[in-house]
Image (cartoon, rainbow, N blue to C red; front, side, top):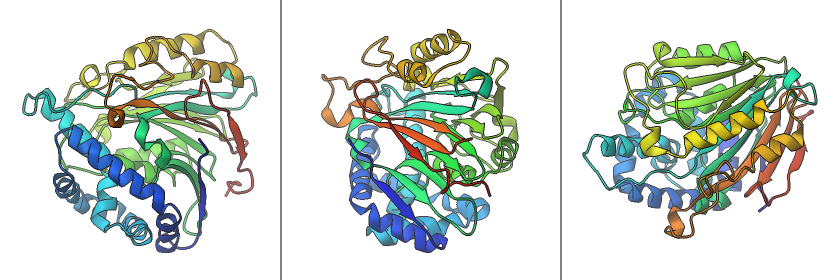
Length: 376
């Protein structure tokens, strides 16, 4: 599989319209895929739209400038504003269904995820190159793989950034011109399920503007968050930190620092959830084995080479629900999970390395963004 590369520029409205127009085919693919994904969780598309509109007051209050980006994507793609908004609230829709299942309201309507994401970050002295990095597998519905794009955003109102993202969404795994690289892993808690803050993917897009790890932490702490999520951060200057978050504000952020120069995260909380409980055992039960395997592989080496990181991302322990996640052939084809993309981000050299598809059988391509993401 080859990832489409889409470069956009201009004002927020202009570049977002370009994004919608140039990724129109992929956006419609993602729109159709999420209608099915919501239905599989017991939520109709119309119900998802109504639920997503409840987040607009929070977007207006804390990220009003991103309305233009959502509207521009809609205009370019031919979808409505509400449809693109709903795509950007997909985590909130899906995890509200998980919470309902946990509470016994819709038992049996929601199936566990198989796979999600496995991520690591290294300080320079733990990497054979001497440079920090973030690497991860992105596990998601196999049918959505053809909708993933590499979006290159050229701006005058903030730093340029590159993001590996489901078409139509604002951002996902991201590296910006300040030299901040961000990996993302999903978390689910009993606190999820209410429209009481900014959606996850809106938060990710806000962090694409962050100049440093410290300011990324401050950004997350200063706004209400509707959904839990994990942010694995590394900078060109060598700072590395992991941020576990649950719905809430500053009190619901658990930073994890790299005492050994290496951090690993999958889809369960390593620290207690303030005021709630982790739902990984229900929603992403394979997270625990994946964490143990990735932690073990990282700890085996004083300095990890590119090849050793790639090998860790192809681990098949507990197959098919492994770090390298393979589709379960016995499942409904529309509900099969797989690693759809693997990525390594090098913030000092501003390089992306991407393997589109299963990393055990896909080639890695290195993309040089040293000019596009030159220091601002």
